[in-house]
Image (cartoon, helix red, strand yellow):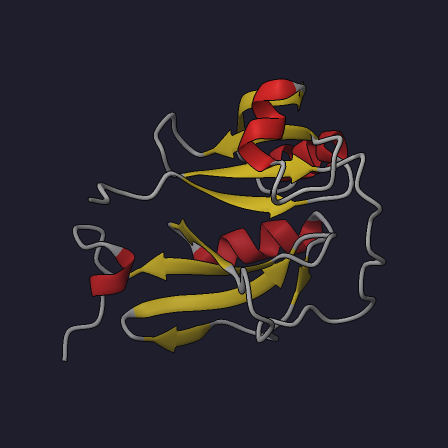
Length: 161
């Protein structure tokens, strides 16, 4: 059956602009620069999900060259829905947030704020053995920034009762 997670895809209105933001602001590596897919293969893959003609632009971003990456994706032929103004809503069905780990949450938050990142929480919380704070990208995707207390454990196994 399943052997692991590969990627989280984030739909953006402009994949080139988003690639720059995720690289320049969050410091992610561009593992696969923006590329475009169109034609028969992508029509067979996504033709039942996306109106024809199926055209997508994508880029792969990550921290390391492993399977845990962000895929930034744009559908330039699909009429874009108006982006809801204001605070992102993590309660809508679908992608609610992306968790990212750092080694110094206060320093990382300060650096991201200096780069203009908008945070959704006013401070840093301590919960389940993690230190956490929440922010969003310019397109409304919500992220939780997490600092682990125990480096030798995955983030989900930080809490020890």
